[in-house]
Length: 247
Length: 247
Figure 1 (cartoon, one colour):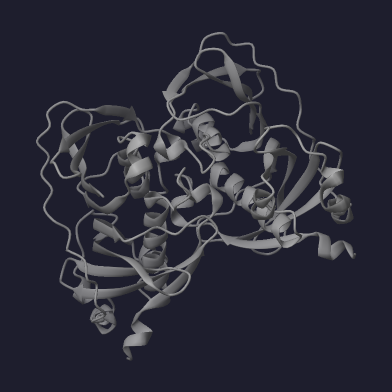
Figure 2 (cartoon, one colour):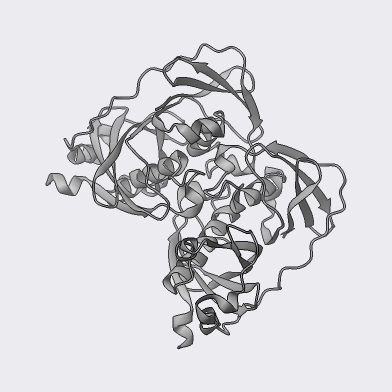
């Protein structure tokens, strides 16, 4: 297979309700697009969510790191390229490039996914699915950003908390992956976004949370505009951890 | 001009992060699509936001009513048609039809818009813009749903309140029109959405709210699964009113 066939390219426009007060695409919406592109790319190649659901398998997002030079402005077209970097027995690395309207790369993202059985919630051997066909899509396109790091948060007092509501819940009955990003971005004052922007955002998804769960947000200021965030449900169980780097 | 040219048709797919736990498109996302279609349709005909912004005029959404027989399921294609029903001096009525993957009409929406000067915040005479050209787009396509009604809410104690955060704020520095819908839907317990669905949702946008404003939600149960909601900012100023009808 040629390297070109291994890369999926998808076109978008930064819609009015998808930009923040600075007129730039929000990170939550970009994350949504990235995850959709992952789905499109996998579906077109026979290992998408819909195909897997028939076998009662589903993809689970484990890590996401997004590193942007700039964000598209309102009404600007942009595109997302995605490809599979590695396939291991229990995880696969999927990378992304974000291109502006002129085809210039304005950012990259890395993600790590596992596949689980929806019945047992146990991981599935990726190399055993469809005879390991996914390996044929591995592509050596460069993704010149750091891999997701280990995130450790030391804060013991939450800076915010909320109850998971109807709008937070996805078709699986979980708080959706994008909502966590939005809630985490809401920890920072608007004033910060006026003079700075998010250079890099990392997420480690650890456990699911559900309707009615109390989500508490713990925030470390690591200095140099690097922040660690941990989201816990109902007091003590970690749901996800994020690293947010402003510039 | 033929009637066909007056109607804009736009295609969508119900994306995974745009459906709720029942697997159906959320009303907030549908509302977002409707407002985008309004923008596309107006822009293609020379009276869109971007054109107006150059003159420092902008469209302001005053009323929205959405009435749905059913919502698209996850991954289902659907389309939105939109057209101008009436143009008055200070308001225009824009209608919508929502079509399922087979082209069957599954719902309709009505909206009322004004145009204001961003400098003076005063309304602009629509019949004086571009020589009243917008009148040439008036179309008599049927929209067999009720017009937005007058909404009156009597409750004196709020059932919920929140502070407007970064993710709520749009490019104009206001809490965005769609976020109000999401916050209002979040007033109802998940259990209600498990056995019922929203038949009709009406919104009257009264005033803008801003970052840091405290939004309080007042809820009337009018019986027969009809609810009135009023959103006030900072104690007493009405921001918007909604009517939510379940079935």
